[in-house]
Length: 352
Image (cartoon, rainbow, N blue to C red):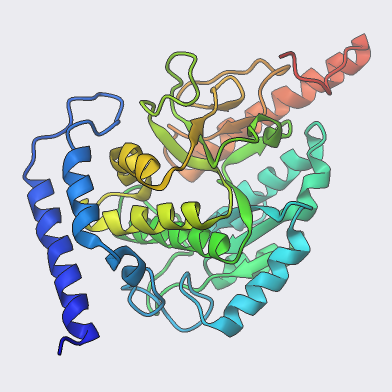
């Protein structure tokens, strides 16, 4: 008689084998990160995984889980989070959320600028009542409680410092990004859709107006190629994500996280670009990218203030540089609005 331990060992062994085969394949020739050469191998990985993606996502099996407010949480902890999400949710059970640490939450840092942009944007101030700030350390949580009413403390593993500025692609950074991915999946599993926004994004207009009703998932991108938003051959940027709650999206997220094993040392954004074609097809998820004319960033900066909704501090290195450049954008926005008001222009409507 086979035991559950035997089956689990089989599934995990198959997954590791497939991942090793995958790593020996030549890189994808697609410059946009579509993963053309990786997709068939990843499909085999998915087949070998079977139900292992669900097993891997269970609380207690994640390497860095702890017992308090983790991405995989107990039922009592889910009750605490669910209560917070209910208070924040819109009528359709959609919440807005961001992640921050102590360095990015200190007085005068990015969290202050982020919240200020909501207050100065066109019809964005009312959205603050739907915003949940997820703090990854004690300092960020305490600071959040001073400046915002909807805060959640997501503790990290004992002995790991998430409070300081995290260097891009270093181990703590990677761990934090994948914990963020697991937390997003947890919100979906609790039945809430979400709009995730990095805290180094200033909101000038309501970007939810750019989320189509028929899309299951909407993402920003570093560069927008062509005119087809459903063309997946664009480099995804996880700084702005809309995900619609439902079984398909939960399965999508679980398989996305399971694919991490095939790409060691890579962040969730990199893995998404390698597996998005296979996962969208496998789970029937409609993924759309938003033009950088509306969700702008410093990779492809667009500042038509009659159109732009958000500006992301992507392609900028370091907290100081991000803060400086985004402050300049917000100052320009304030000048634009003041000038438009003097001229009697209407800044409350998008031009197209």
